[in-house]
Figure 1 (cartoon, rainbow, N blue to C red):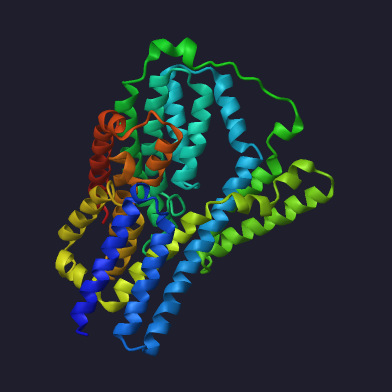
Figure 2 (tube, rainbow, N blue to C red):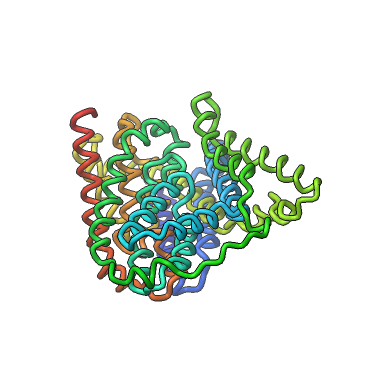
Length: 432
């Protein structure tokens, strides 16, 4: 069969699979299963097109090594987050916020800032779910709670985009060595702050401040039982573990090794406490925490990365790159990154970034890769269905509909997105 016919068939399979993934709620088919089947079929077609060449096996082995690094990193991070949840770190934060008895506006800004910071080391999906649970205990006013929830999606996506471990797309770019931890933090932090703070300010104007007495100070019983108190040694080790990937990376080792070290240390510490009769530690064992992680999401990443790897190996992405970006003109690369952010408000950003990693010229500077992290990470905030955080928020809060978000949050998120790109561009023109 002609080579270009194989290309068309593989492209058609990818787009059909992508459509089924995007419409999973309509077809009632889990996107993880679709992604895995799509990835396997595309590699079978690659093998068929190249007549079972040994190079196909070698290329697939290389792809699986890259996938392994990402999946192990995410699994370790998700496990540590579950540990922090079990040992009451976020319950303690919720309690402290309520005790401060802040005004509605101060409360709104504090929760937004906490969301932004948390999502820099937790994934934005987990951060959104945690902050919504905190918000439920704090807000009694329905309108203020809905505005807070919509803003949480924006803040979570923005904070995660400026950290090497804050979003799966930044993790992918970091592990692919497109930028260092220092580069994403220094180049990305100001654009991320702009992307968050502009919508935060605009949506803050919609908060009903006269509802303060009813909404901000709910009844909240602080339980003195030891099992409901935060376990600070475990929390401290868990928080410190998020610095280990950076240390490993600086040392020339893969970042997932650092996070695995953190899980191992926590495992030993928790087991030792359990053997000493700590019943709370027995319930919060590493095994139990791993069982609570979203394994389905990891399978989705595996399938998508396999599919994109197949398209890259066969040469489709290279041709697509030449068509879109030509010889790597800076202006076209910037425009392409910005456009990709808008596309990510409709389509999942994981395959978009995975494709961009394979498509962009090797000579692209780290600053342009940071722009991709910012646009892909925050473009999904423009529409509520554009990010995992937004979809999760809709699932948790029934009143947060597509129409409500479009009316209340999409325009602020759009202005924030443009502000983030503008701040990045000024930095790029001044420093490069």
